[in-house]
Length: 210
Ligand code: HEM
Image 1 (cartoon, protein in one colour):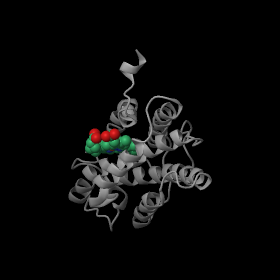
Image 2 (image 1 turned 135 degrees about the horizontal axis):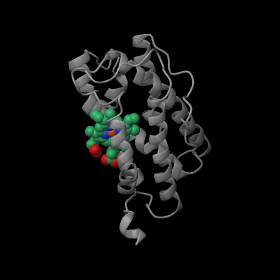
Image 3 (image 1 turned 180 degrees about the vertical axis):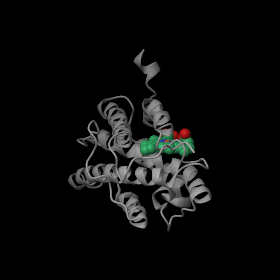
């Protein structure tokens, strides 16, 4: 019966496992208005501060694991923390200094864990392609001026995503690593959500509702 519920394809398994968490993030008060006219710059800056904290922790773990297992995945050209730092510099902001209570950065101890962290980070670049034009239209932000992170790989984004899916396709959903990938992807979504939920980064966040 389990086979009927868990797709054989790891991408579909990850998608299904994290679907509810993705919907929750899309509706998070700090993110919900990103594509709408009333979204406030102060809210956007909050998001960047929180993401910068989370991406520093997550990419630190990715790079540490890959340093011990060279050749498993080429992350060097996919680093996103620099994009966030560029945006923070533009606004003169700093990353959130301390993780809020309950925000637990997932460990990477296996290839499945690695895939589980990469899936949300690479997938979020797809959302960026939808969000970036709205940031420019409504807030006047461009990749050079405050919106480098959401521009992600720009026109290369679909190709980079396809390359990542090709890598995922080498791993079955069934078995230890597939299960770890789904568990760690859920933990990564939970971590990002907890970072958005807790504490105050650069001042009392204004609501995303215009
Ligand atoms: C930290 C925040 C976010 C994370 C971690 C995240 C993660 C992901 C992932 C993993 C995918 C790939 C889904 C697949 O397997 O096909 C994806 C796709 C996508 N996301 Fe997000 N996302 C985030 C925020 C957002 C937001 C705020 C929006 C709203 C505008 C958004 C819009 C999209 C869109 C349009 C796609 C591509 C279409 C689709 O396959 O559904 N995402 N995101």
